[in-house]
Length: 266
Image 1 (cartoon, rainbow, N blue to C red):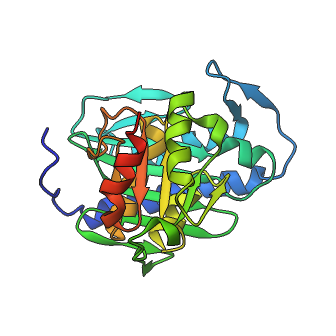
Image 2 (cartoon, rainbow, N blue to C red; image 1 turned 90 degrees about the vertical axis):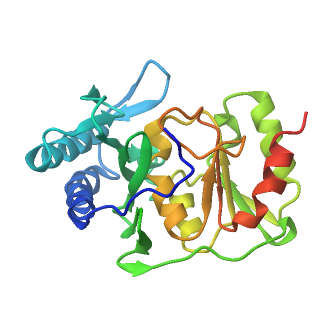
């Protein structure tokens, strides 16, 4: 599918449903946060808790009650009706390591992917009480109020972020990030999806990561783009269900070409 044209505006009913889903997951994550729970390891060595699983089940229950024919891709419970036109992509706790260690920078991610393209996204941080909602045809809102990214057309003034250097998919990907980090004013770490919300609100300028899966990035795209920013892969292509997992978010799209050039250097 071509991604050159803007998608049609997302219907208000879908936005309201996404917020109801976020409310349901928030009840569970708040209940378990800084509690006594077991931590298990998945096949990819990433951690998982009862809170991840219960929160995803809550998301799926609300969705099933309202749009039972839509597809679902969830981090914990896999794919149902993945060939549907509308597929909801769910990450009940993005930043499980932060959640486990009591750090309130994790978030619940909810995305609607329509015809392979993310058109609706929610980043919900239920402990701090931050929620960003982005949807095609609508301005991104933080706790109900429109937000915009900030103008920052040069690296010397820019603040960059990534979750952690050890999470890049390869040494070459880390080296590419470091070429950008060497040019910016400062770099901050350890915020998972929360960094993209802060970028949408004008507090960060660049977020660069690799090795992400669709449930890690689908919800971020409408939030960042609806605030005036840009999200691309490391070749400059829009992010879709087929993207490689190398993700670049910019508050000021004028930095795109220069950032891509640094990421692409041999």
